[in-house]
Image (cartoon, rainbow, N blue to C red):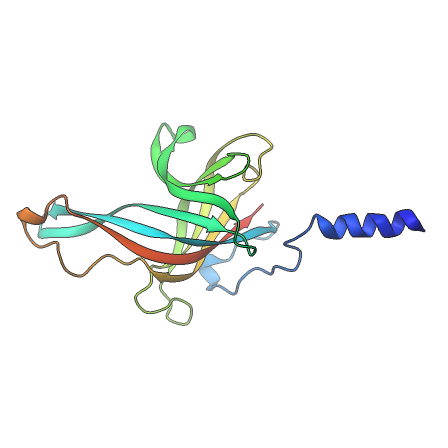
Length: 184
């Protein structure tokens, strides 16, 4: 009887996200069947923009995120940024690198939502991303298949400061927070 109790305690001890439930999301952001929630991390960072000329003037153009992801205990678990995906010949992709084992995944957005029933005013869209590359065999992130960006706040491009040639090259690092939901 002792071994059954010990096994139960050990099993409960290694499943800290067992109580986590997938978030409620718009239909187009739902992960396909057959995949399970791995973990949820809370991000704090910036969405980064540069002022560039366009055919109609100048506009803020997104050039990548920079964020730190934390678990529910406030410990850093992952860093998020833009980097070249070696599996796609260097195509720039959203990247997550685990803080402990440095396993890394690159993902491409396959769906987004600005549905006001979910997305807060002034917040960047919610996303569903599919992993398109990974490194670090056996690492924490390498089994990741889908990632959702949900519960966003902030991060949208500025509405001012990018109007003319003199603004070309200006950068805006816009604070944002979100939750990233990792599936395997």
